[in-house]
Image (cartoon, rainbow, N blue to C red; front, side, top):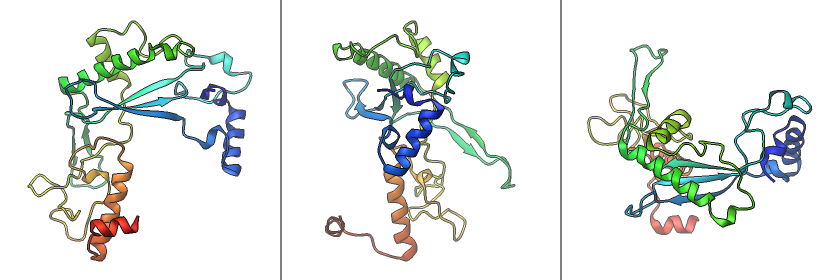
Length: 244
């Protein structure tokens, strides 16, 4: 069963209530049923992409019984999705203050896909995903390709598609980079350079994007910050094993 049958107002409400009350049912599990780390080129030493397999098409709205047919689009159907996450992009953006007024919005230049290597990674990843879905194991489940569509084949068309639909997947880092050089925002003890009594304790202190999800490393940064604030020494390897 895919998420299509649940993306309806009454069914979604029942599924959420069941999950909240009994911790059971489809709403009690995460819809990304599988994951995979891949190398888009055989010469790479480590994976450069993470794939997420979703049992749905990423519906943007809840269907209302009897009325949803009046405004139906091509995504209102059963299906599955492979989402690709670039783990080690070369492109670097910038975040700068607009003025000395803290109420002013900052200037953000994301600068995604600025290098040919980054663009090539998504092209190769998309073609790998297509090859995977074309395998015989998918014969009973595979329908027409909805996005980007079978006509999107050339490098230029794939680049245009990626530019149009890509998002951050909630893992931006580095806007308050840690380091010992003059360009670093915080020092190795998470203290903001030039400002007394202020620390930054989140993923923004990471010098570069890690090759995976940022949740666990951010929790580790917070635990380290607690030790720093309380003046506690870091646990040794044997102590960490005993604590585990």
